[in-house]
Image 1 (spheres, rainbow, N blue to C red):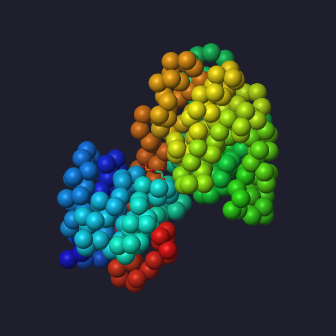
Image 2: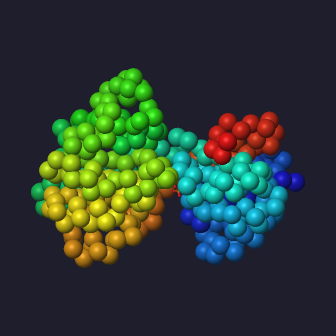
Image 3: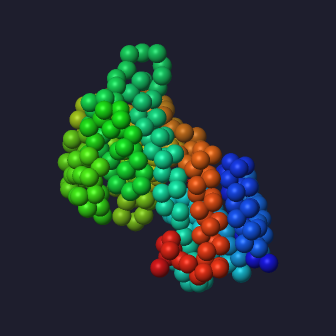
Length: 307
Ligand code: 3PG
């Protein structure tokens, strides 16, 4: 019987796990659960017997792929797959997939929540500002960027987007201003919300040159990946621009320095929580389980990312 390992260092909500179990068992497979693990060895041991693995931000590197002798497919229940060694997966003939769009509303709601929190001075009781009428720049217009735009318009924000891979018509049909130059996005917008994946092109791409273009009252919101921000440039921006705030879903490496010198102008979640809602867990977990069943039963590779 095929073993489907659910390996989540940060567990799904219980209902999502039961939803996954049901789909796996109805298909005649067995679900194995490894939650809250703290050692890589635990993952290596569990992976050794798995035909398929469902993960979140769990690291599936060459060691895991080497240990998983029976593995045919790994599905990242979520959007970003920078935690999977795609080259090793391809070399081993393992199909890697993600579940695009399934947790995007949860991340978008958090991005807006972080904006409100920053605008109200981290809820410290002093007089803050409103989002209404402010210019929001969405940097990368995928599922999450689109969902942020939709909510932000409800707040009365003036929304702009830059994404070299998305057509002007798609962005404009959402009532969002299309910007074809990244510098213009940053020089136009009071708020910038990051939604790009972490890859060789995007890592450290949000640098001082870009940030210093932002108008007075600048807030950078990062619910993407900490790696896309150049932390040296970030520290310089904090030092040069006393109006600048940075709110991020997950702490940067330089958190200590920021906390020491720039108190009140930042907030970082201690653990990545963008997709940590029961709805997002359900959507992404169940989509992952269905994709695995469809792969084994129908050889469906629709969401493969290592083609
Ligand atoms: C994603 O890429 O889908 C999000 O960053 C969510 O990550 P998580 O599953 O670890 O919460």
